[in-house]
Length: 163
Ligand code: MG
Image (cartoon, rainbow, N blue to C red; front, side, top):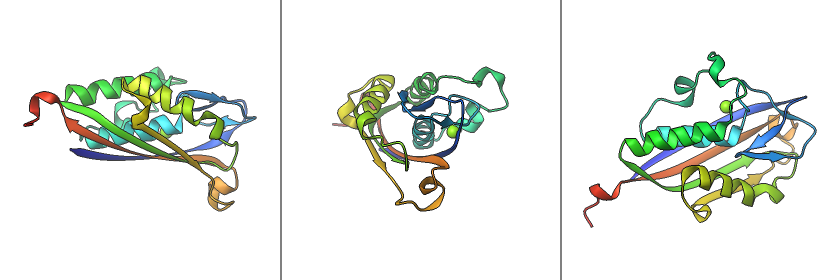
């Protein structure tokens, strides 16, 4: 087994869509960023890459590269999942925590898990998506941005298993 951890933060900005785990959230602000600023998918990609000991997303998809301006992070996640599988790993489990004071994410969590599971080509019962506030504390509590953490477990692909 291999374990990976990823973390990301993006600041709120006007005139941007709020996209979390590939799902468009109804909110008056979006997140600032070079890509679609999907902070959840970015944390998940770094967790996958860390577990597989591959370069992080900053190296793979640099924000100085115009190719990635406004890009759909779910498409990048599919690319990352392909790299992980090409290195001989199966994605076994995913768990995510999103720290967000507003908007409330409860109505979107199921959609987020299903969207990520589709991108990873496995079932949503292996994708945990949890949302929390920070009780008004820190930059999240001041509604300045959103933070996300992801943990993933990779297994050796079947050909490498002994039993
Ligand atoms: Mg990011």
